[in-house]
Every structure is written in C-alpha cells, then in structure tokens.
Amino acid sequence: MASSNTFHKRRYTFQSLFKDIKQLIVNFQQVKETFTSNRISRQFAERIMLSVTSINNCIYCTFGHTGSALKSGAYEAEIISILDNSLESIKDDEIVALSFAKHYARSNNNPTKKEKEKLTKYYGIEKAKDIIVFIQIITLGNLMGNAVEAYEARKMGIAVKDGSALFDSFAFVLAGSFFKQLKKSGIDVIGDRFSSGEDLMNLHKHH
Image 1 (cartoon, one colour):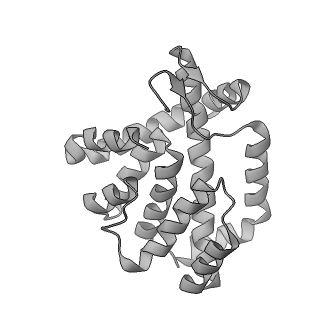
Image 2 (cartoon, rainbow, N blue to C red; image 1 turned 90 degrees about the horizontal axis):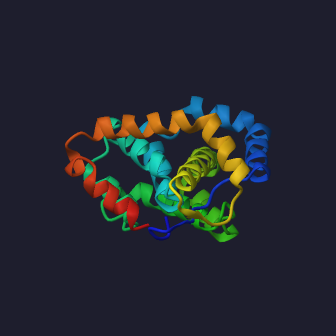
Image 3 (cartoon, rainbow, N blue to C red; image 1 turned 120 degrees about the vertical axis):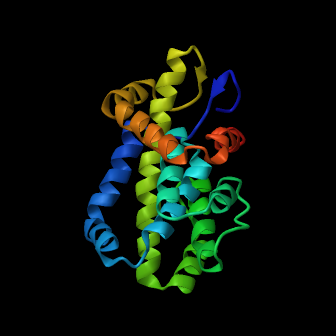
C-alpha cells in the first residue's frame, strides 16, 4: 500500500490477465520444457520468483515464497537481501538472473533488449528462456494476489487507485482462499525466523 489510506499496487484487469495467460498458452511447450529439464534448480527458481515478488509487492506471495525458499534451502540472509534489493548475500552466478527478474517487474513486463541480451549471454539461450518462464508465472501470481488484496482493502474502507473493482472482486472469488492459504503456509514455515515474520513484514511494508 502506498500509504495507510491508499492502496496502489500493480495488478491485473481482465484484459491484462487474458493477455498474459494467452502468452503462457502460446509458449506452452517452453513452459513444459522448463519444468521438466531441471536446468533451473528449485532453489534458484524460488529466488527468481521472490525477486519478482519483491518488486510487485504481493503480500501473499512474499510470505508464501519466503516459506518455499526456506524449504528449498535458502538462508535468511539471502531472502532479506532479495527483499531489500541489495542482493549482497546472493551467489555470484545468480545475481544476473535476480537483477533481471527485478528489472522485468519494474518495467511492467517489458524488459529492455539490452537486459535480455545480458541474460542470454550469461546463461545461454535455453536457461535464459527458463528464467523468463519462472518470471512470467510468478508475475501472474503477484498481480492476481494484489487484486485480491485490493478487494480486501476496499472492504476496509481504504481508497484503491487504478485497476478494476470488478476484476478485484472476480480475483477474490476465484482465488482469495488460495492466496490466504499461501500466506498461511509461508508463515507456518517461517516459524520463529525473522522474529516470527515481523522483520519480513517490515521489509514488505517498505517496498
């Protein structure tokens, strides 16, 4: 939320959701190959997705994928450095991918040719495609989650900027329970780490 009185996060409308779903359907073979090739480890994938989430600021995905990252073997320091955008504790061979993931989110899914070339040059064509698939999938989750949160914000009387109130309601009905469970599962994994989630929430609020 931009302030205590205004909700402003990037999220889907019907048009933008259908556009992204269509893109994933068109690239179905690449998506399938990404998940079967194991070119990207589960640990690496979680850090990529958390990097995108750190920019799109989906509260549900922040907790859910923090929990998943911890389960995959990530250290607290790695997660904090992703969420605070420092990348200080990240492995050298992952920094290019995580930086690209953040750039992708900041550019509203329109990365520059220069950044795409940098990604491909560092990882090779196939691995770069895999990284982009994980980015696209988590972007879908982030923007749906933000729509669910926008619906909740309206219920609390908070002003919501931009977006579509109709779509936010649709997202809540369709996926509200899923996102709430995602957040709960992440909190359950976090346990006593991050001061029982307090430090993580503070990082979330400052984005």
